[in-house]
Each structure stands twice: as C-alpha cells, then as structure tokens.
Image (spheres, rainbow, N blue to C red):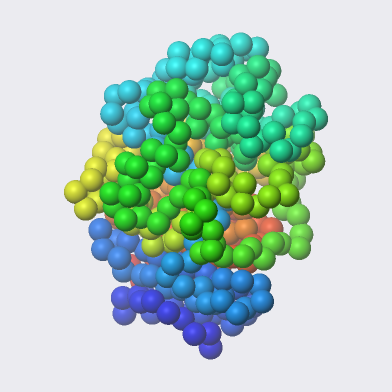
Length: 374
C-alpha cells in the first residue's frame, strides 16, 4: 500500500483508499487531492514523488503545472471585473480592444469569446512557436485574424489562444496583466500558492512532469482542430523551460497546489468570501458559470456546455453528478471545480500525465468516492 500523507475526515476514508490505489496500480507518480466543503478543508491528501527518478517526495510545497486548468483562474479574474461593474459579458470585445473589431469579429461579445465561440482556436498559417513568448505579437495576430467558423454559431475549444484573448481583455480594462492581478488581489492577501507567471525563486518547487506516451484522441479532424492542436506551431515552444514558466499564458502555464485551488474555489462555491476577502459574489459566479452554448464542440470530441471560460459539468460529468458544477480540467489530468449546490470545491494536481482530454480516471474515482460519502 502506498504511503499517503495529509488528512481526510473519517467519512471520506474511501477517498483515501482510492487515492492510494492509484499509486499502487502505477497510475500516479506524485499527486495531491484537496476538497473544501462549506468553507472547511475536509480532504487534503498527497503522496508519491516530485521527480521521475523518484528521489524527491511530492510535498506540501510542491508546485505542479496546471496546463488548461489555468483557464478556470483566467475565467475567475474576468468574472471579478464583471462583478466590479468594470466589464460586461454582453459588451463587444472591440469596445475594450478596438483593434479586435475587424475581419468579421466586430460584433463578438466578451461572453462569446470567453465561451470559445470566437473562431480563433489556433493559427492556421505557419509561424515560429517561439512567437508565443511575445504577448503583443500574438494579440496583434488574433486581432487581425479571420475566424475559422462563423462566430457565435458553435463552440470550438481554444487551448492556447484563450489565454491571450482573456488576458488581453483583462489588461485593457484593468491595466495590469491577469497574472499580476491574480497575485496582488487574491494570492498574496490570502496566502494562496497559485501562480500565472512563476518567479525564478519558485522554480525549484515545481514537480517534474512524466508526459504521456500517446496522443489524445481528437475524433474527426477539421481545420479548427488542426489549428488548435495539430500543427508544429499550435503550442508555445522554447528551448528555455524557465522562459515558459516565467511567461504569463493564462490558458496553459499556471502553477499551483491542490489545496490552494480548493480553497480559492471553495469560496466561489460558497458565499464568495475567503478570510475577509471577497473573491466573487454569488450573483457574479452564477453569471460566469451559466451555460452560454451547449452542443458538439468543433475542436474537442465531446458535447460541451461552456460558461464564460468555465467548463460546465452538465454535458459530460467529469466532476461528479452535479449539473451546476463548473471549473476546468487540464492536459494530463489536473482539475479544479466548484459545486455551488452543496458548496463543495476540489483541486487535483499530478505529475504523471495521461492522454485523456477530459475525465481522467484518477480524479474521477476520487470525486465519485467523495460524492458517495456525502
């Protein structure tokens, strides 16, 4: 039996067993699973190793790359602007980002862009993947780009470009980058170990990733899928891993602990407050999380229900039975979600990735065991 650290309330003993089972079966290298229920931390389990050589324990201070679970943080930060009355999901993007209003994108709203309806899932024309490290250049390319499908007619997941779109909308309204505002407004005041744009001083804490041996199953390939995932320039590329960690890409390169994610979204699932700081009002949460489009996604091989940047649980149920649950999953298995119906939030991070695009078996077992115990 694997050695599991941390704690779980006695009623969640089955969650601990499921967590240990994933290590015993060889599915995990290092991982952490945390849950907050009605404002209280009821589960915080961790185990395994932070490196592939299995010499470094996966500890309480170990940071893990979130990949697309980062998008839940970007969605939250944009929702905070709406909550503050500084932005509306019904606003045209071009009102805050004038250069964006061209090539058929003039009428696109913030809510449509945040729910992957903008037709900008990736760049069809060849480019240098290192260009992703030039924020202004990528935003200029997105502003000048013609949509890959008629905007507003369907969703098509934007794996990388979402972060630049949400981040530039945020920057145009707030003046700061999204990652800077996340750190200054939430993470520093609340002591949350969450980063979009990782400082040099934190690099030594990052878990080494054990990448999947297979490619995800994308289903039928179309131009939107190809641009999103299947060109040599669809992902940021650099020989300098430090540059990638330091760069703010609010769709892909967040770093965090599971307990920090669970605490932050535990506030979102409840009354919106955490340790005297208002994270998000329930009204703004409901507006951010409500379904803006549901149907077959043009990029992912699933029927999807999208809020304003949040995946909704109702279509494919990766996070238990709740139809009102929302959050995001990341490449390889990570996830964070909030269930406002029962005021529950969970965070799961790991460093052995699978090829699953959504609904990784490891967190799914943990979440199902948790709900079964409620």
